Image (cartoon, rainbow, N blue to C red):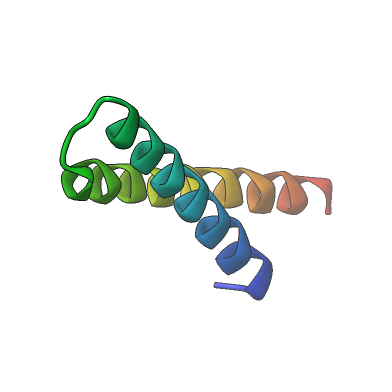
Length: 61
């Protein structure tokens, strides 16, 4: 995994974790399960984005 891929995955994980934390606080729920699920979904989303970027780079060459 290249450094740019790690940055993409980390950024999407952080963003979705914070978004799910904000949602849990607004809904007055325990934030822990929401943050864990949000972080997991964010990491999957980041992996998909970085794979698509790498796939498009390989097809250009």
